[in-house]
Image (cartoon, rainbow, N blue to C red; front, side, top):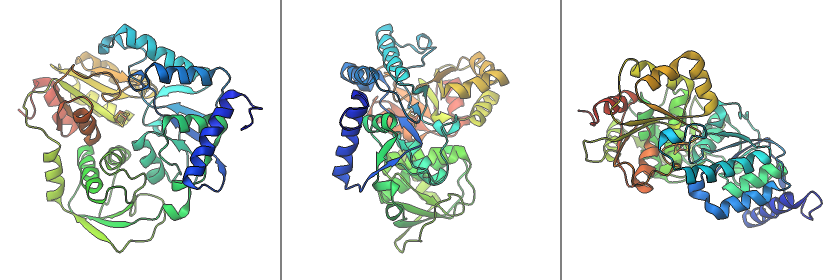
Length: 387
Ligand code: F3S
C-alpha cells in the first residue's frame, strides 16, 4: 500500500495512517470493519477540500462499510431550506466524489440507526464526536475520534493505527460520577452531559445512579458530553456494556446542577425565529413523537427536523412525514443546523439539544434556548420561548 502498488489514493491514505501511528506510538495497524467520515459539508471543506476528495476519487475505492456525516444541505430538498444554487452545486460535487469512492452517501451523525452498526469489541474508524462516544460507550465498539482525512484513509485501506481507544488500558474509567435526581427528557440528558463534561473535561466517567436510559437519551448524552468535555468514552453502571474498575475519585451531580445547566443553556431572549430538533439526527421514535405533537397544528417559525434520509423514508411510509410537513415544519435530511450555512439567517434558536446550543452560539451567533421537544414545538407555533 505504501509503495503505491495499489494506487495513489491508497498510497496517500497509508502515508496519513503511518504518520498518525508514529505520532501516537502505535505498535501496528489493525483492521477496521466500519468507517464514518466527517468533513462532508462544503461549508467546512471549501474548494481545497473538494480538490483533495476529487484526487482520491480518481483511483480510490473504500474497502469497508463507510457512511458520511451530515452535509451542508438536504441533498434532495435544498431549495426549500433556503440554500443557494452556488453552494448546492459545490455540495453535490463533494457527494459525487464520495460516491465514486463507493461510500454509501447517507449523510448522518447517527449511522448506528441506519445500518452502520458495529457490535461489541469491533474496531472501527468514526469521526463525528457524538457518534464516536455512542459507539465506544453504548455499543462497546472501539474508535478514536478520527478527523475527516484519517477516517477516509481508514476507509480506503481498511486499517487504522492501534492506539488510544483501541487499547484496553485506555478504556478504564477515571472518575466516578454519582447522579442524584431523576432525568426524564433528552434535554435533561443533554444537560447532564454539559455538567459532567464541564467538570471532568476529557476524563472517562463511571456514572452511577441512572436507572434507565433509552437510545434517544443516550445519543443526546453522547453528543453533549463529547461537546462540553471532549471524552470519547463513558460508562453508565447497569446500562453500557464495557467493563471497568470503579475509580476512587468521585464527584456528585445533583438535580440543582441539572437545573442550573438548563439555565446556563438558555439565553435571555423571548423571541424564537428558528426551531431545530434532531441533534443528533432524530430516530424514527422521535419522528413519531414530533408528528403526533404537530398533528393539526401550524408552525410560525422556520422549523427543521434533522434526520437521516433512510429514517425519513420510514416516516414517509408511516404517514409521519405528512403530519410534520402539513404543519409547515420542514425535514432537513442529510444535514443539520450546525453544518448548513446559516450564519446571519436567524437570531434565536430553540432546540432540545445541548450540543446544538454550543454550536448555535459559537458558529452562528444565535441566542439559544434548550428545552423538551414539546417546549420547542410550542416555540415553533408561538414564535416565543415558553410564552
Ligand atoms: Fe449531528 Fe449536526 Fe448535531 S452533525 S450531532 S445534528 S450538530
